[in-house]
Length: 633
Image (tube, rainbow, N blue to C red; front, side, top):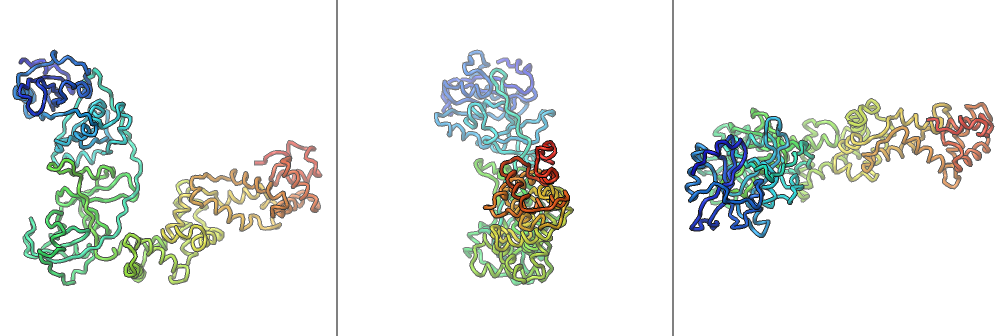
């Protein structure tokens, strides 16, 4: 068969060929259509279609008409003849895969292991945005040329509109990790006849919740077991999370033991290899923890705080440490961490012998409470790191709660609650006032939407408000669960209050506080407290408070107070007293009653300048309506 025409095919396209299958081998039809995908004018991969006479949908998957006349395709008298020709043209092996059709779309879908979308592809350099792995070829990653194939194999809906939801985000770092494993890269291209373009992959990564990784119990033993790559006769053996880890440090294991929370001077129990604790720990299947291990680090790009995963000595598993000291030990001297999407982590290392498997993720705990973690708990309560005595107090609190039977998952929250409670009864040198002052000041300075609010100054009403809320108000639960400092700081950091200057200006606009002080508290403590409750209500964190918004609320309040039955008529009396003093007129209750009537009937704007104008014109706003009946903003 003359195939010289193949050389004239432009780069990165496809061709359909057919071979004769008289014995119906591999449950394929007598004449088998095969789609060949090219790269750089050479066959790159081929797909034989095992759908009997119903090959049209899969031909469409490669951009060909469903009614393509196979008589016009190049024909071979056997599979072997076709394969030899492909390999001659390619100058090497060409993978040939079988794609089948099934009435059940779930069965058809199973031929794909996973689809990926790249969030940082450089289209100007011709980099692909979408990739897939086939279940029967996990050692190869295929770029995808059109959306047809994914819908033909039932991975997406017919129009491909759900592609983002059914694909895993990856980036260059993920591809580099695959390449380091010598995973092959090939292209699945599409013919232009019916090929539909893929949508552009989103470049942003939506934030996902941070992983919850609590403490894991850990025990260290000695075992006599022939671990691969370890020559010592007796090996320290860490058991945590039901898995065992040989420590490969020879005579220099003290530093690693310390990092894992163990006292190097402690005599370790020797564990028999027949002991159920050893046999149930899956010995030899986890990476060794070495003092000179080669480490690669992967940090998640779309979590805060980021999760950190370690690949140790080329293992196909990833490790997370529950304690900071161990994570720091293995980070020291390692290359810079690679940033990857969280959803891609389970796909970083795939076992070619188990194509449906995901990356093993192993969590390694440490002995007892981790000192760095305990120091962080103290910080969340006090807003500063502890000294040695305070750190031991935190550890002792944690251990007492553990001994009292609290579930392990609740121990950190209960430790925070205990420390926060004891602050209020004077058990520590830092008082609630000191901590709240620190938290609110730090929150104001770090607020991204109110940069350096009030210059970081904390007012007495704010201290009183947060302390009352922390220990007796509606927010007492969160303040104890999160730690006193972290709770208050986060509320202030995430809120959008006005500055104290803007608050005072809004009160002066409405009540005349600055223009004629000395008549009643203005603003009153209860008014400031009410506004603080609005500003720092978690439900209002996205409300954009402004001076104008406060003035509108003051005006609404003055109308409410103009009715004696509502209990705040004194506000109208005080604003008219200030207005009369400013206008040089004697005050009497008639001024309050007349002003209140105009407020109720909405004939007079509810602000200080309008009341002053009313007094100056002897109560007759019609004498100068342009001045009296205006907003004065």
